[in-house]
Length: 171
Figure: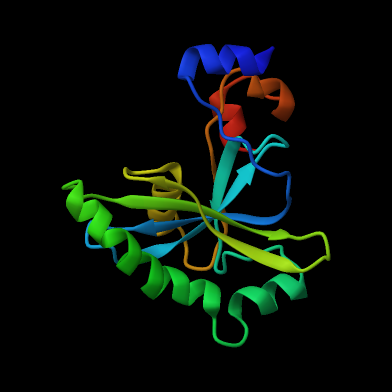
């Protein structure tokens, strides 16, 4: 039933295989396609955005296998976002006359054999994203301190067992 509703509202759906997500993250660029940094994305069981966080390392909280995959050897994940992605996307942005910030949602997932696989582009967001806001806020915090940026509503007060935003700020 939800599929019919989405098709009626939007006209299309994207169907993707269910993956064992190990790390969801966003990559932030400025208008010159200079890499500004990475933020961890926190999604619900359906892959919907919940929050993002900034850490000294985007892999914070990950296991040794993830650390080796992300940073080891030729640093293929970092190099992709430093060199390859900007050169691939630049002509498309120029053709569209887009000049502005860019956020790329991406992930590392475990395949059926237990091996880590990089999914370099899940979504491209030609705008200021929540990840960019978190990255900029993180620059205002003491260097090396982790920060989580989450949009909350009044119904979240129950989850945190608080009655107001003032109380929530002290949690």
